[in-house]
Image (cartoon, rainbow, N blue to C red; front, side, top):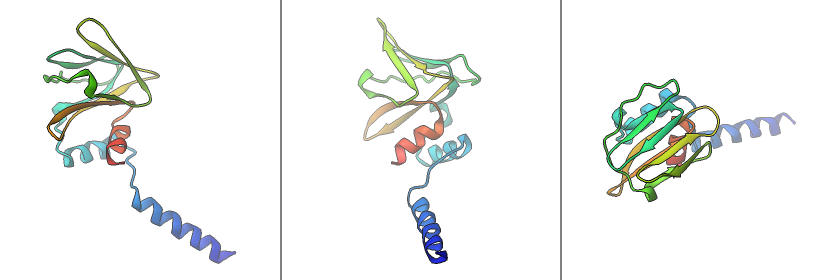
Length: 129
């Protein structure tokens, strides 16, 4: 019985090191810096985000965020669980389903992607999976 318990604990510890997950905003920001994302390309803890042809900006919530002056195509917006969005004439509105959302503008293979989720940790975990 003790051998089985030790084996199970050892197996869990090995599996947890194979797929490390990010749980805090601080760890998420550090991981994003390692990925080459500057803090000027992060919007954190806002109620909704507007995306226009030249600017991405967050409003409401507890976050104080500067606008991101960049363009993103509608096809390059990735909305994870916990956020929803709709399109008006000249802008895309992204809203939090429950409390707040965060967004990261990241460049991959020559294209810019805006990834939106409830927290930065959710975004980083999506990127490393």
